[in-house]
Image 1: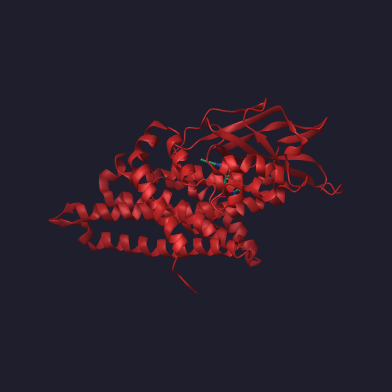
Image 2: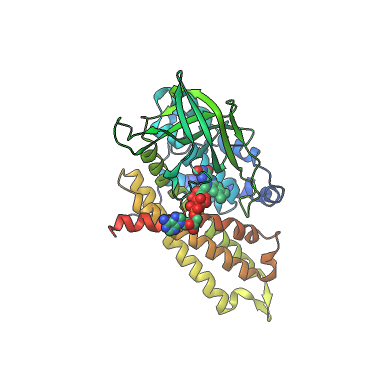
Length: 386
Ligand SMILES: Cc1cc2nc3c(=O)[nH]c(=O)nc-3n(C[C@H](O)[C@H](O)[C@H](O)COP(=O)(O)OP(=O)(O)OC[C@H]3O[C@@H](n4cnc5c(N)ncnc54)[C@H](O)[C@@H]3O)c2cc1C
């Protein structure tokens, strides 16, 4: 077992860390405060070939593996979660379905511009009545004269409403039956909908607790017509497809958890060495040292779980269990580390000038998005055979 990163992996970690510290950190507070989408940063990430890390170079991707992608996400989140989730949702949720299930034509049409960061991809699974119970999709698509006619609504969708949002892959009920022409099971399919298609509208952005500079909106489809060829993969395969996409997405969100926790620790350690009380730096008090030591230990353990999930995926092994474990572990860890970091900052941790204040607000969604903790526990228990 080799715990050292390869030279290529070290390079991507170093590149993204330098970018995050040099380009993202100086503007993160302002973007969050003004709730401004980070257009310039996305353009720079595209120029650095980071908006399509795990996709083949022939489609404009970075030709990297899942570990490279996880490292990049971790390093971005160490500094700012809004930028990280923009890249993460775009890559694992928006672009991934087209890469994995799209026809050659669909890949050629969309992937180069998505991987370049010229366009953003989104994934529309969640609905007002279909969150954890994602198969309860109410959005319907019926075939009419060679077109899918889509009616329905999506909830909490990332990246769909920016000036550069190009495409959303949505789940929709496309008929009763199992997709093989028999049975009464509901048939769900994935369909590509381009921004600008008449009948597809994005609602106002939500007022959120965190991830303030990322774009999250409700979507609605009203007699929205797209060509029949926009179906992604076989008709009726949508349920299986989105479960696989969620498995992959969990590795990215788990990398966000490690990154946020590490960022919180780094800020807390820096502050603890500067802040003096009772005549010495607070880092010299055992109570503070215990917090820092526990954070560091837990982060290292969680990081290994995330990398294991990435390596399992890259080795083409089943990674469902490890990805769910990594997501469960890191979401909770991010919340706890952000809280401890605020505690170490005392009253200053409650003030927005300090990054840990933003980290605290940004952490909570990591136990909810991409499947709640309770959903991860269900996935893990199922894998254990419970
Ligand atoms: C900022 C943000 C960005 C998002 N981005 C996207 C996106 O890009 N695309 C997308 O499709 N979705 C997105 N989501 C949606 C997100 O994935 C869902 O919010 C999440 O899956 C939970 O669904 P829900 O909100 O409907 O909660 P619910 O499913 O209603 O859950 C409510 C509570 O009940 C619990 N619960 C539900 N079922 C069970 C059960 N069987 N056993 C035990 N407990 C259970 C849950 O764990 C939770 O605690 C985003 C959400 C947010 C807030």
